[in-house]
Length: 116
Image (cartoon, rainbow, N blue to C red):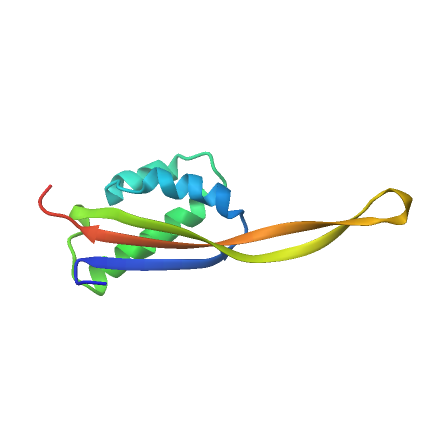
């Protein structure tokens, strides 16, 4: 990671990676302030967690790397598979079927791009 990038990671979010990727794909390429506004008014449940992670990435850029927060762009938003809770549900005739409750990982990279 170069001096124009900053990163924040959130592990084990209780949502499926497929649902989280919908929100992450929406903010990829946006400026940081537009992405924060989008996440504040999004109706997705996971948007609050993504917003906190983006705020952490912006704070890392400002405090650790000395970047200008007005020029930040969400360059990457990675979603990965986490662990799976395995539960069982009773079925007919004394049998059981398994239910998997997935978790996901999120990494957000913000980058300082040229002038406004």
